[in-house]
Length: 307
Image 1 (cartoon, one colour):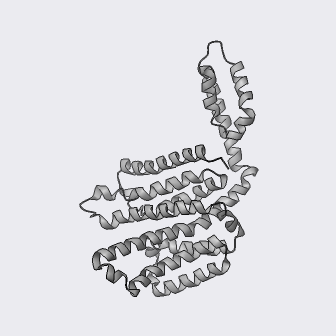
Image 2 (cartoon, rainbow, N blue to C red):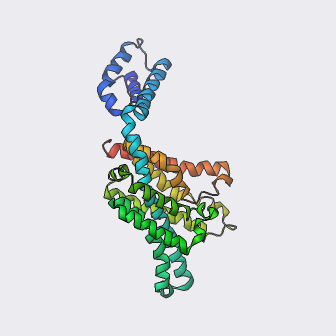
């Protein structure tokens, strides 16, 4: 294989795999036939033409009639996944609360019924919408709404605007709205079925661990003494979100769900200080998520057959 052919094949890799399987040899033959004697590199015009053609093919697939089903399934999957993200956020918060309780008052006090109820109540409120989506049961979604209303009656401040904007409280309401939407949108039930139980077992603990680490930095690090460390508080969760988005890119529905979910999911990681940190630090934090996304997307492409 000549150096020119190798470079042309690298450019043709920008096209979708199935498109290359049908047309690569034909396109390569035309390009090599038009090459000058002794030419070792593609002409700039050929490079631009190949990349422009690859972009057109991807755009047709992303926004053309063929992709309509994926565009319906992607947002539906995003809506169905939100209660699970919210549940991960509540579990992370309650894990930290329990750890702080053990540290401050000891294991005996934490084991009392009052403390157990204090921790279990928000988890139950968060778990019902996720269970409703997972099992596709409308009555569980309705029960979740009733439980949410009773919970808010005991904690009315959680519905105030400033509390809703706080990462630990706003997602509770959004998850209930998502559960209600899922109860009356059959597409969401079908969309959640594309995620295997194995994937839930993998990404659920990772999500809880990433959120717990991010929140722990905020709670347990002295802000004044360790300000440089606190600025990196979103990174563990951003990495988890980047990993999940990269894995989701293995399917057309997953790519669209990741696009819809990425920003609201990233906001669960307490990103409130991100606009105030130095630009270089913010770019480095975002770069961590981008690197996690790129590595996982590449791994998924190599290890799993494309969907």
